[in-house]
Image 1 (tube, rainbow, N blue to C red):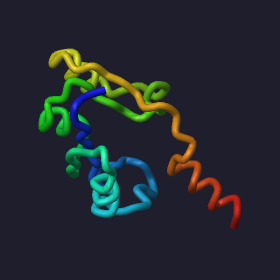
Image 2 (image 1 turned 180 degrees about the vertical axis):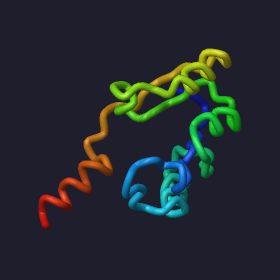
Image 3 (image 1 turned 30 degrees about the horizontal axis):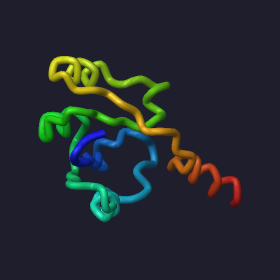
Image 4 (image 1 turned 45 degrees about the vertical axis):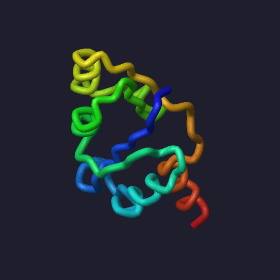
Length: 106
């Protein structure tokens, strides 16, 4: 999709889901940084902060946002700055599904 892969890792305080994240922000950041294809990763408050920081040509969100929808501010920012929006392919190994499996096995 591009020449570099930069990743904004959402800070714990801004995740916005009850009981999340289950892995602390610094551990998530270290994990993302360890991926060979990642050029750079930083902690961010939200996607708009990441978009302003890196000014990418392509903005990629998780597959689940195709159904949930993006925030109006994300769509507007990308439109204003001519940033293409893409989604990842479906990932069956989500945090929600992992939590469900743990609860069912108890």
